[in-house]
Length: 149
Image 1 (cartoon, rainbow, N blue to C red):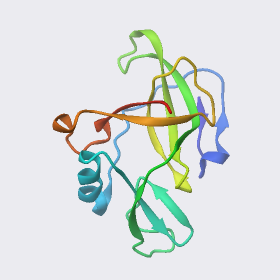
Image 2: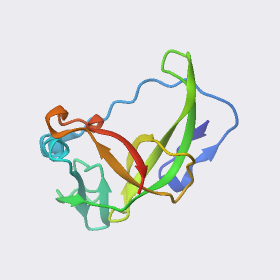
Image 3: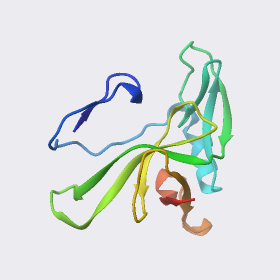
Image 4: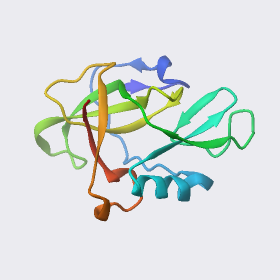
């Protein structure tokens, strides 16, 4: 179990497990542009005076509107956890890796997503595995998972 204070670098780790609610990301006013990009197999970030944020923020920390930019990677595992139970508490046949993944061309944030690999480690270079174009709906699940690059 981990407790995040403000930035990922300030995570405090605790042994054990914690019950959590399903995470829902609300993209704000840039949601339509992000959804369009996901359908096209692209990911957007927000370029602000202090760096690039992924996913895009509604406003930059200084209150400015920022600029939407495409992030291309390479993507890297920032941190990860192994999940042994599904959302209902049922054991999974095999543990699944969930990771915070950030592209090298972004400074803050990242995507929380599944990683399929024989092994996983912090700093590992990964790439998105996209659904076929006709199956995409403009959601983060248009990326099926990340895999080793």
